[in-house]
Length: 402
Image (cartoon, rainbow, N blue to C red; front, side, top):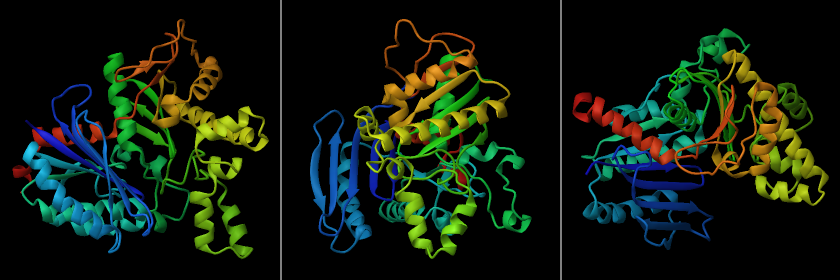
């Protein structure tokens, strides 16, 4: 059996899954685990399960730090896992690939320095990913490991669209639009190309979760995206501000704000959380708005206005559109958001579905049939990463890279 251990190392959690590379629409999950990292007094909350068995739970001590806790658990876990299932390869989600890493590729000791140089571009995500890669390279050196980059999908964006109106000396330093959520947007594009049997599909893909981004995609190639040099730019998000006039930041700095305070507000106290004063969770904001909370209502309106602005921009880039696709927690499950979007896009030719669609499968059509349709594509980040690993195993076996 050919498998891929998928590792998604984030700033507050580690998610792992062992998937069988069967070529099915949804790859069978043989084992999965999640660690939610708390404070030193709380420890790391570990949950895991085998296949469809019930979840089990434990706590990892953080007395010696997160890295040591992770190393100790991996040292114990890997022999137990490989006793039951072979691990053919490991696929790591890496948020930022910079300008060098433009496609998924095998990672060995030779790439570590180049990956380390990218940590300042996404310190909250790239550093834990790199730490985990180094640990697994030392613990299982005979198992090939691949990096799957969130930025890679966006390397087809034209130079004019990734370049800011800043001095060219800054552009030569690597300051440009990179785009993120590429694994999700690529998954949406591939899924819908298969579902509609259209390889030249003009697609506006919307990843709407805690982080939010929009992409303009044609023929499986990204043409533009809303996120930029960092994941802060673009749409209003759960706690991130999205695009703002940079003069606002200069204004605050001139009035005594320091960089750390400013970053904390932009990253963690803005978006739905900052506007509503309630939560970054769309469900809680929507519940408060339904109960008459004025700030919550405004937060939803600002969020939706930014979303519609991004859709219009993407349609203009594509010079038309065939499908608008939704993914992520809010995109998949927020019925009010879905209905608002369907109603607003009537001018594009989006028609209501009658009868209402039944969710299920790799994707489903939310609207009626028409010149422009709205679809939902459930997120499958682990499966998308595993399929990238399967492609490397088939077309570029590890031995061929050495």
